[in-house]
Length: 156
Picture 1 (tube, rainbow, N blue to C red):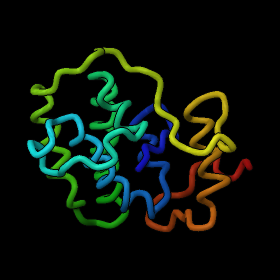
Picture 2 (cartoon, rainbow, N blue to C red):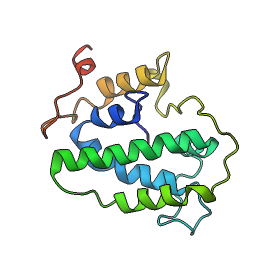
Picture 3 (cartoon, helix red, strand yellow):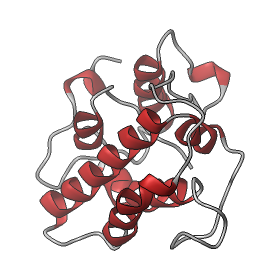
Picture 4 (tube, one colour):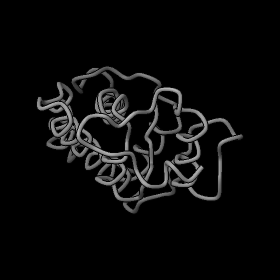
């Protein structure tokens, strides 16, 4: 469970993800979004409720909206690369439509959660997640489906 903050722009962050994450991360995003609702009230039950990324999305309305935008962008990216709709799109749409029922402690966006071993962490979330990709994901990270690897990926 994670949010790969490869850019502070939620759409660009989705477009930069490797093929495997474009397949996997819409589901994880949908699962995280569902943790903001009382257990049993959302399409997915809670999972990893106290995970740093889940805590982050429940911390503020702006955080939740950022992940909604990112999740939709991941689904768009999935369609772009694989020419089909991701099954999690329905759940993400449900979360967006029902967001009005969530009471958030804060309104403004807070610093992104950085969920990784300290060895990968850098000064910012974006630098940390890019480093995490370079150091930890390079064994499987490929961009073969209509999208080139981001330019920073080659600057190791």
